[in-house]
Every structure is written in C-alpha cells, then in structure tokens.
Image 1 (cartoon, rainbow, N blue to C red):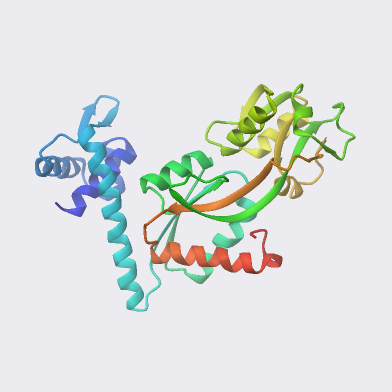
Image 2 (cartoon, helix red, strand yellow; image 1 turned 30 degrees about the vertical axis):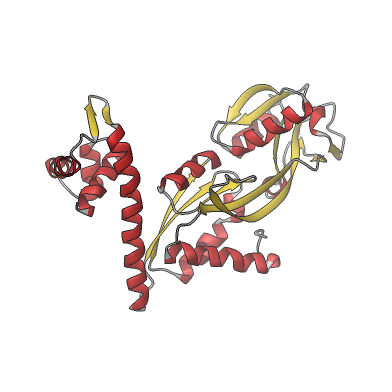
Length: 300
C-alpha cells in the first residue's frame, strides 16, 4: 500500500472530486483515478461512490481515510525529525484557530513563530471551535483551540481566561449599569454567533442553569458584524472583554457580566496519546513561554 495512493484518497475527499484533487497534488485527473483504483484493489473494497455532485465515502472508505490521515501524519513527523537531525528547521504546522479572539491572542505568536522558524510551513485554519475540535479528532489539523471544558479525549492547555461583557445598544434600559447579571438579558432580543461557535454552547448551558431562554433574532459569523448589529439597535449580545477592549468609539455600552460561571476560557487542544510533530512541539513551547511572561502577551 503506497502512501501516495493514501494521499490521493485524502485529497479527493478534501477537495470533493478527482479533478480538484489532481490540481492540488500536481497530478492529472486520470492519474488520481488510477491511484484510487489501485488502492481499492489492494483494500478489496470500494472506498468511494462516484456521484454527479462529487464523491461520497463508503463504510470501508471511512475506515481507510481515518487510518490514512494517521499514516500520512506519521510520515510528516518522521521527515521533520530526520530534518531536525540534519540541523534543518523544516516541517509543517497544521494549526486551527478560532475566529473569535485569535487576532489578539495568537496573531503575534504566529508572527514570532514564523520569525523563529522560517523553514516551517504554517497551515492555518480559522473556524468556530466546534469545527476545530472535530478536525483535531480526525487528524486534519494537529492542534486547535476551543473553550473550556475541552472534550475528555483531547489534551488541553489554557491560554486565556476572560470575563464576558454585554453589548447594549444606546437607550437600552440597562445601559447605565457598570455590571449586570446574565439573566437580566433574558427579555432583550439577542444576537448570537452562527453554529460551530462553542460560545453558543457556553451560553446555552448558562441559560439551562438559570431556567431561561434567549430571544434570538439574528446570528453572525464575525464579532465586527455582531457589534454593528448591536450598534444598529437590533438587539444585545455577549463577547469576551478582550475583544471589546481593542475597539475604539463603540456606539454602545458594554457592562461587565458578573456571573462567576460565565467566563471565556480558551485553550489549545491536541489528541491524547499522540506524539506531537517537532513543528507543533515548537508552537506549544512558544505558547508556554508567553504564559511564563504574561506582561509580554495576552496569553496567560
């Protein structure tokens, strides 16, 4: 079983078709099809259903894909370790960062990492934390970030612990308060993030504990859009304090949410019982270095 054939399978699934996979791999579409045919012959089972709208994994394909990702990751790790022995700083950091807060917490670290290790390719994915958890589990990325509590099957390193603030449009009945309780927002129209953001789950659990429901009137994928909707008077929302602190001239009030069980606790995640690649290990060391020097960074 050739790793190149496994790589073709992974890329066909990722790209959703043979032609797109071929362009990514630098191969022709017939070559990719031939590689998949040879892999299916070796496995003794069909791995993909070829559909008009793309491809779909069979049950056998799901199993082979899961193992293929692990085998290809181990190949990359081996190449990085051998390069390290030769004194070369090479490899690939496959890192997933959440949309919310990464520009403040992680952008300076990514820049420093790049400066320290210019030979390491950085493959960044920016998505909601829920999607990042799944990608770490599946081996699509080596490390990601999510809100506490982290899934039991993943390692966790806390990097930020921030209070939440309420976003209130001008004229809101609570707008003159410096702080408030989360339950006081229950009667206001609420703007949430789209699905895939773990902050939604945090708020849903808080609602359950308080036996309350949110009147959700809109959802957004970016903090700036949610802030704009609040400024326009559509409703209220909740964001980590650090996200608000970096913005000037907000046309709204942002009182602190006093509830002790409602905080934005973000951490790095990676799979248990899996050795990190040298590239990922260097990233983890850099984050820990900044934790040890909190005055130099928001990471703590």
